[in-house]
Image (tube, one colour):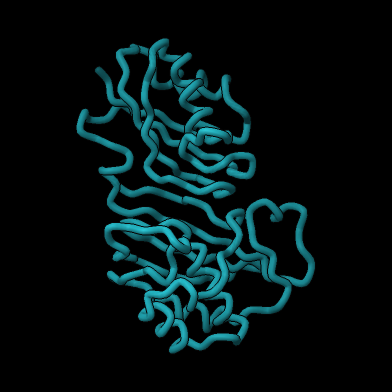
Length: 244
């Protein structure tokens, strides 16, 4: 039995997230059907991150077990021939039996993109949050460092969603501006649902002068979702990489 790891990119616009849903199309469902056909057997696939509806991925990692002897160079081409062009398998490797795309992961890196200029762009519309008012990226860059380390992120979770623990560790957080785009990056060992988007939504209030750095700290410490800012749109979020 081979354990095969795939590297997958996708535009999440047309999909209801990564995970299979009973009444909506997901990236996992599309890949699952294609892989089953290619290896000619049921092959349950596992994803490294459960991206939400509308969220994109550059470095999603998938693994599955199979008896198939298919050449790994040919495997991505074979799968890609059966799936829509907004999902692409870019690499395939055989990995040790104990590897699991989700449970073997050390950290995940997410990038959120804001297009910060007066007029929107037809080229960035699907992959960024357009905000026409100028944001203070220096204040945002200073403030986001607050989330580094282990914290209870209850203030930034999805409203009314419960967890055994809401403590997560953010290894690295940064804000960088390149041209008209602001890129907010968060690397962590794990994330609550909507956590990145809720942090971004609150950070934008800092950049617009509506909140201060101490305000952001108080919101984190409050462990209360009602205190934080709005949820940033899904289309600006990208799963950049999963590190093992």
